[in-house]
Length: 336
Ligand SMILES: Cc1cc2nc3c(=O)[nH]c(=O)nc-3n(C[C@H](O)[C@H](O)[C@H](O)COP(=O)(O)OP(=O)(O)OC[C@H]3O[C@@H](n4cnc5c(N)ncnc54)[C@H](O)[C@@H]3O)c2cc1C
Image (cartoon, rainbow, N blue to C red):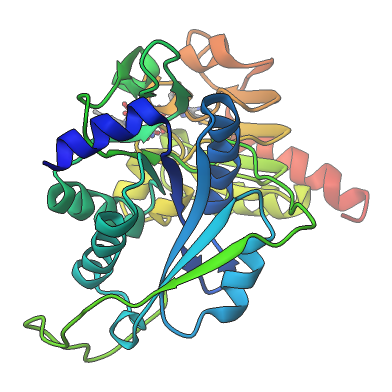
């Protein structure tokens, strides 16, 4: 029944593309704006309406702010039970709105919460889900969503579509699409009150908000790899002198020496910086997929055959423990 409705909708082209908007301690999450921008582009191409969707409580100011971005409408799913993050409740509430409005496509940022809610919604709605895409388009031959998902560190790209006749969901990697600018207009806001019950089998004992560092839009980044031996003080000092953000390769994040938010690569984040200064990184394919959009890559490696040099604009064959202190010294001489 649900499937035939979606088939009918595709024929008459009355569908909507939704962007699920997440709000963090500093306001609208960057990736939520990125998917709004992409949805606007897809909506233009395919003649579909676009909408931003928020689930929560007491979010009037943010909802208004979202309405100024390029969307045709904003759905605000509000309920006191959504004041705190409980993925089951947020997915349930969102599913009720999906049942009512029948969108064709729902996009999520591939954040911790985004993938959590997207997967739950996909199960509830018997939808198709394309996870962690780095490209989105509409196939003109059938109007279906196409998502590219890199595998093996970007060595292959899987071109994915959902099966016909179902709701299409995609989670989008942060930092891949451009953020749109506000339009100067305000989109219409639709409020929706889901039916939710307070029971969920557990209760919140304590709430802590972890500080998340977003390096995807940093202009300058210093990336430390295992060549640092896990000693990050040199890389940190250099980053500070350069006014850059510090990032790491996965082994350093695995060792707990840096938070996962600053891990670059296929299972981390993608950089779009002007400059990345890369210290003691071998250049494994899983890593280099995260530096493809960097304008200028400068690498320091002791091994002249290190693969990272194939992906670098400037290659410096040197021992970082000898070279980096000299660079820092030069900055200090100049009073930086
Ligand atoms: C499914 C999967 C997903 C993965 N996802 C990611 C990911 O998102 N991001 C990621 O980074 N990795 C990822 N990896 C791991 C990846 O394959 C590599 O193992 C990792 O990137 C290697 O990190 P590295 O370059 O810091 O360390 P290494 O490979 O150990 O390289 C260290 C480099 O430092 C150089 N060096 C040593 N001493 C010095 C010195 N004194 N001065 C200068 N250079 C020196 C060495 O020559 C070497 O090139 C993933 C792996 C798998 C299987």
